Length: 122
Image (tube, rainbow, N blue to C red):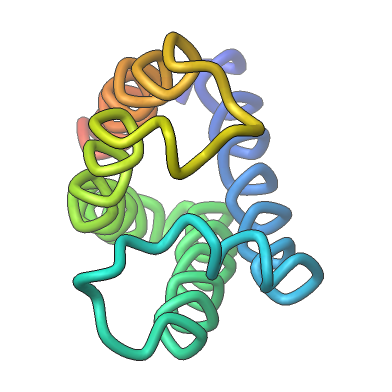
């Protein structure tokens, strides 16, 4: 594995560990951005936080990195509709700019592409 790919895999994994932990530190924020059509928002916030931390942690281990990358892709696709909801209803999120909400969708695409890089082996 190239040094760049190794370092970026660690950064990506640590990013998701921190992001997942943030679900427990700032639960109310994540609950506030849950689309109203989803049931059990607090449970889903905790579940997604655990998934992010677990998959981010697994990504740090070469043996599990490919599986973790596919898991992160699945997770990012699963939460994509919530980000679309935010972009389509910016009035519900006055703390964010409309442009910023649309840029989140682009960023999510980049995160999916980044995770896909780790599915391709060394």
